[in-house]
Amino acid sequence: MTEGDAAPAAAVEQGAHNLLMRVIAALVLAPLALAIAYAGGWLWTALVTLAAIGLYAEWLMIVGASRDARVVVAGVVTLAISGLGLAIGRIDAAFFALIIGLASVALLSSERRLWTATGFLYAAAAEFASVLVRLDQTKGFAALILVLLVVWVTDIGGYFAGRGIGGPKLWPRVSPKKTWAGSIGGFVVGLVVAGGFAALGLGKTGPILLLGAAFSIASQLGDLFESAVKRRFGVKDSSHIIPGHGGLLDRLDGFVAAIVLAAIFGFLRGGVDGVGRGLMVW
Image 1 (cartoon, rainbow, N blue to C red):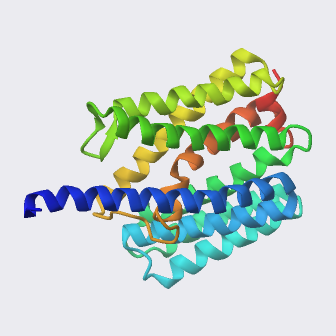
Image 2 (cartoon, rainbow, N blue to C red):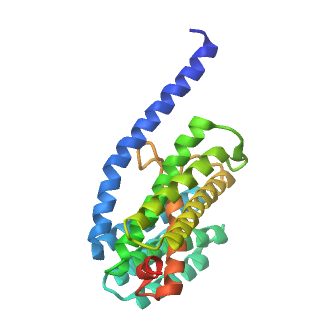
Image 3 (spheres, rainbow, N blue to C red):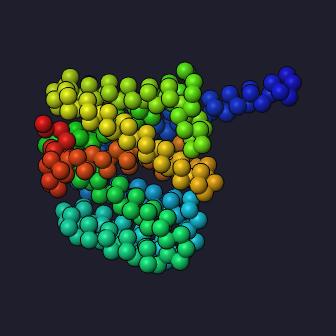
């Protein structure tokens, strides 16, 4: 084998190894996440809060602000306090804690203030939206699973469609590997999942398909947003905490965008206590 042949072979082997690690990690993490989502309550809130703290920490590492202990502590403490408020049903106190946290992070930041504040807002929005969508006892779990499944299949479908079909790049300057074929493929399977919810009687066909389309697009935009931030700071992965997937930001970027959009839709239709119902009942 020549040196020229060795490089493509090594790339294929590395790609196969990464895919295997992705599958193993997904098989372990996905059932656990679904079980906790089903349990809801304080258990789901605890998971969401830990994830939000992880997102904030990884964001600070990406933008080069993780060495500022005051900013780290202020953000982590207020996210934890907010999570506690959400766990005991004090949504007002949780929201107030996040407002205080955002102001504290912005004021304490000695450099890159806008980037650190944006990172806290990103993590806080993910925390708050994830809990609100699940909060409703009748429709919260169905609403959360709709978002989760659409995001997951959009990512998986996009991955295989992009690798299998190839073709023109979606936005090479931001994400060199993403293609239009992958984007469209992910969108189509997201619609299929939404259609499955309608077929099972979990929502009216038209609204559920529109929600599936919106969540799939939001998921892909969230992925591109995170890629743009990493490229801005010359970072490849947000961390290496999840084998084959990178960091929490790498894995949850699409979910964050979709769940925040879901929370906004649900809140406008069902109020703060009926976000899940507002999404699923039309």
